[in-house]
Image 1 (cartoon, helix red, strand yellow):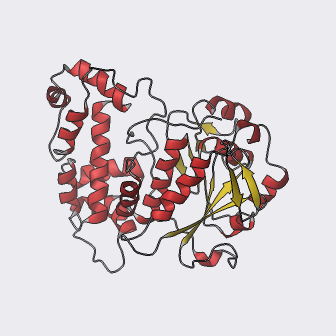
Image 2: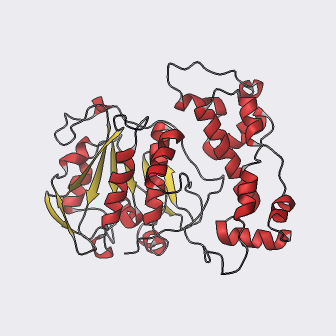
Image 3: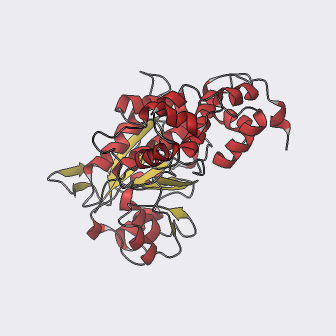
Length: 371
């Protein structure tokens, strides 16, 4: 089983839905596993041969999420198995799992980590205890996979007609045995509303942060990332595997140009200006940038502007026109067009997702009312 995913940033074409997807607790049966009413319930399904780090990722990231530091956690995370008891891992440790599949019936989110290849469903549909376990999951429950855990979701029929990913070494095999799945080997994760998939271990971190961000906004997700000392935001559309992710020794990096651009997102930056920050020709700079980041400089710049706009919409009361100007889009109409293309929502709809009921709506841009 392959358990690593690599990459650096993301294209604006990556779909990142933004509804606050915390299923209502009233839809779940009376809890017997989860003990904290009001928290979003996350169940991690442990199977023999799992990578311990993938269970740890879910507990560490969701377990730290809170509105403010020191406040009550927003999630309750438990590990479950097909039957309570010891679960073998890919390392020289065994997990003692206290909960069985009853946790799946109560969960608002189910996460399926990978296991050694011998344990992944290789053909057809789920059968036996694993099929019985998935039958317990409620229709509205969010289900996510890490790495080759996508084979379980595919065997359950959850990925038919959907775009999905897994570790790049396993993508061809997933496509071969599940032709109804649109397998994308070139992304870190996919989000199709209720069903999400990710590539290797590192992209499991990205996917968990993405779900936290969709549920509770950038401020909560960024604080979790800071506490865990990981990159706060890598969207799903960036490449899994970059041939040369680390610059060769003694070769100039493009990091200074990226830092320079991030401090000037409100300006109309050009490729020539970025190249001059590294004293490179445009051609050399573009080649080095793609080697290090996995995409073109201007695509990266567009994504940073989207991220800046998202931050301002979530955390400030600035009018949409001002948000557009500060993020480098110029006008509210331009911001609306870019946000719609990237996320499928308008600036006002995006902001409404993350604003509490006690906060007054800011002044709208005139372009916001334009169909």
